[in-house]
Length: 58
Image (tube, rainbow, N blue to C red):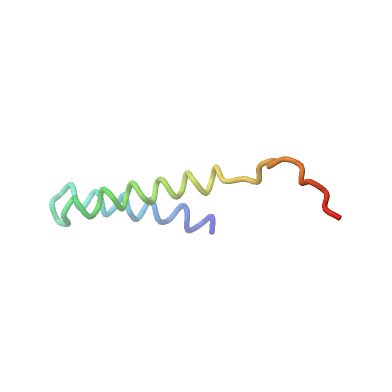
């Protein structure tokens, strides 16, 4: 999973470079780059957080 979180943004960045060279339309590459960076940051920051004590049930 960690490797995939490194490879996907790099791949999206390379596609964005192709978009800047007008080989691929930018309206495909920019959202793809944004989504991959967002997902990478989200999964890196996702951690188990304290959600409070659970009320004891009988």
